[in-house]
Length: 321
View 1 (cartoon, rainbow, N blue to C red):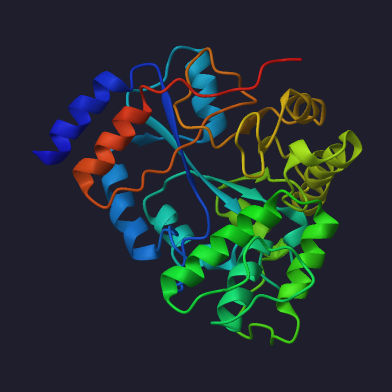
View 2 (view 1 turned 90 degrees about the horizontal axis):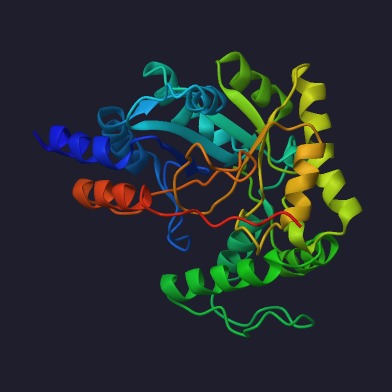
């Protein structure tokens, strides 16, 4: 009865729209100093709800059916960003057993690297340093890491936000300073080109997510072209097939990308691109600015309410220059 009532509400709210979900790593367990990451058990619970509430389609097929006015009610697509070996622990088996399509947006320069993504390196370094001062010689925005898990988590978020908007060279230099004297994480599993092929061979779509995950709006035009087009070229060299979907790093319209980068994505030969603006896709939506959403409520009812509210949001976009 619960699922039937939610489906009824969604039938009304979702008419003519596509909900695109966004996720990232989905680890078995998150460290206590990382907040907000969806863990495998929670994702599995939410995913079972999704199976009751939605009809999942490949993203490109959903857009084509929308153009033909053939999109089913409660239509949805699901996407994952970055590139993690942990996807094969839980996400890939779960999607395969339920035959759910997905797009995996890959940061191409991370492939095969023997170190985590930049944001994880920050979190790991802050936690490894523990209570005390941050390294001198750099303006971190704060001096102390703190002693409690909540204080460590707060420091992690503050440093990630500060370093995120730096030039890549400055970001790497700052992270290197933060990691000085700390051992590498022995348990790290790199995500490789072979993993990308395995995802494709399992029936999933592969999209580009830039080469190095910079804030494109902070890049020069030449740098942005290389990040957008270079990622496409690197993934196509691995897959020997076109890569037609793109996800803007960080993805907030007007803050993380502008109309100039939208134009570059189109010129690079992609056929669609996704943002992190809330809302749903409609026939009038720019296919190079498709909104995505991640519900965060723990309660099924609240999660359903968040999803329905999201169906009523007009997504933020950047306008052509």
